[in-house]
Each structure stands twice: as structure tokens, then as C-alpha cells.
Image (cartoon, rainbow, N blue to C red):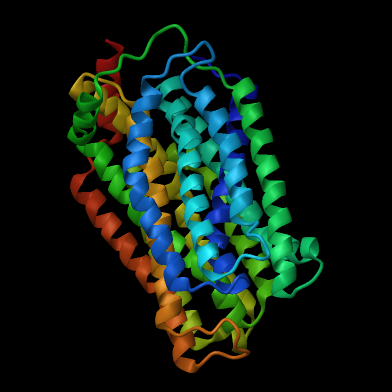
Length: 452
């Protein structure tokens, strides 16, 4: 299928909208319930991690359902649209806890709506990314669409991350926690509406293949095929580790700027610089790919991120943001996010390639089942990360109401924003080097077999 410019643009807009809602929850849910509402960080982390375990059943099952869907509107778009509407409702509810609600009822509220948010996000996210291998062929066309989608998703990631702590006080009418509570409610509503608009545009302008029907096996056969696809499982393992690494620092960096750097306003500029670097890097990946092989580019992305975290650790313990300026933190931030920009694009390409590999190896094609694993692993990674962040805040005895933190608390915070993430990346690199084998040459061979 030849995709026109408006099709690709709509795909990018859809990626933008879905990542706006994802990043609001991923980055600020812990802060909202812990700092704004006063809930225990350890409880929040544990609850969110438990909800991701529930998704272990829900996400792959959704992949099977999507693969077997057949309607006159297509296989993917009905789920994308319905999931979007349901998810918009749940994201508003998550950040609109009734003012009269306290302690135990508030915990129940969080549990119910966070699980509902995860389920409804699954409804639209799995068919969304499953469309890439379904409407493109391996090679340049697929890589260009993936790069565009991931770049737009990166902009979607940046919007709530950069603007939330600037917009919330304005919408709430002040900087007190009560005002923050009001501000988060209005901000969540704005983002929910933006989400619905973006996916409606996507569904109206991105066509599905209608000339050939996807052959689907039985549910048990599809799961057997998935777990026989060693390359898909390798990519899934890498996705868990890479996303966990970034999400740990993503959950803790606001605490770092507020309680260590002592300049919450600088946080908005910092994350803006970081995400701008990520988006620019993702846009450059197709040009870089003309000169660098896929596996080499993946290694470069991992090493660049590890270097960034190492520099961040050194800067933090030397307290250069106090002796010089907080601007020095932008250097390691840009390095980390440039590496992540590379990995974000490459991992999606690798997963798409594993779909073609699985078709050759297992004689069945399961875009939705395999991409359901990506959705699950991304959410699992965020659950693991927020669990680690929540436990870290409790472990280092960070007091959200204190004017000044103890020296041991600040040292613990500096360690947790860098060391666990670097360890995850090292493990991801080792796993990929040992098990992944879909090189450029191997994919050419697979493409020739599929064409025949």
C-alpha cells in the first residue's frame, strides 16, 4: 500500500495524541497522589506495579481479539476509536479525585481507575502500532513511517512533561497544593479532549489494507507462535529494560529539581531541552540509517545513554548545579534523551521486523499479538519504574512537606536518578548482543521469501 502524505501526517498526529495521555499518567501520577494528595509513595508504587501484572493477561488477549476482528471499518480503527473515548474518561477521573475523598476511599479510587486506564489504553494502543507492519513493507517505507510516528510521539511525550508544572498552577489559580489539585483536574480534561480529536483525525485518514485478509490461527496456536518467535521475545526484553531505565529517572527528576536543585521552574526548561533533543534525534534516524547498520545504531543508542547517566551522577555528587548553574544538568539530559531517541525508533523497527520473521518461521502472521507484547512491556516498564521510584522515595526518607532534606536523603536521590537506569541499559545491551540476529542482510533474505 502506497501511503500518501496526509496518511502519514494523520498517523503522526495519532501517535502524538496517544503519547500525550500516556506521558501525563507516566510522569505525574506518582507526584499527584504523593505530593499533592499526600498518599504514601510506597503504596502508590506497589499498586501501580500490581496493575501492570493484571495487564499481563489483558494485553496479549487483546492482541488476539484485534487479529480476529473483521468489520466494514477495518480491523484496527474500531478498537482505536472506542479505546480512545474510554481512556479519555479514565484519565480525567484519575486526576479528578473528589475533594471530600480521603485515605482509604482515595486508594480504592486510584486502584479502580488506574486499572481501567490501563485496560482502555490497551484497546487503542495495540491496534495502533500493529498497523505499521500491516500497511508497510520491510525497509525504507516502514522505517520512515516508524520514525515519523515515534518523532510525533516524542512531541506528545514532551508536551505534558514540559507544560504540566507551568500550566497546573495557572489553571488552579495558585501554587498551594489545593490549587494544584484543581489545576490537575482541568489539565487532565484538556488533554483528554485533545486525545479524542487526534485519534478521530487518525481514524478518518489512515487506510487499512482491504485487498487481502489476515489469516489467523486459533488462540492457543497464536500464543505458541508468539513464544516460538525468539526475536520478538528478545525485542520485548530490550523494551522492558530500556523503558524502565528512562521511566525511573522520569518519575524522580521532578523530585530532584524540587528538593535538591531547589528550582522547580528550572525543571520545565530542563525537560523541554531533553525532549527537543529526543525529537530531533528521532527525526534524524532515517538519514543516519543510510550510513549505519541497524544493530550498530542500537548499540550506539545504549552507550550514549549510559554515558549520559554517568555524567549526571558525577554532576549531582559534585553539586555543580549549586556551584555553577542548574543549566549544567542539560548536558547529561540531552545525552540521555538523544540515546533514547535512537532506541525508541529502532526498537519499533525491530519489533516490526520480528513480525515478518515470525511469518517465515511459524507460517502465521500476528502483528497484533506481537505488538500487544510491546504495549504490555511498555506499561510493565512504567509499573516497575514507578514501583522503584516509590520505594526509593520511601527508602531515602524524603519528606515532601519539609523545607530542607537531610544530606543522606539527597545523596540517595542522586543515586536513584542514575545508577538503576544505567544498570538496566547494560543488561539490555548484553541481551541484545547475545540473542538478536535480524540484521539488515537477514531481513533482505526474509523479505525475498515473503515476496515469493
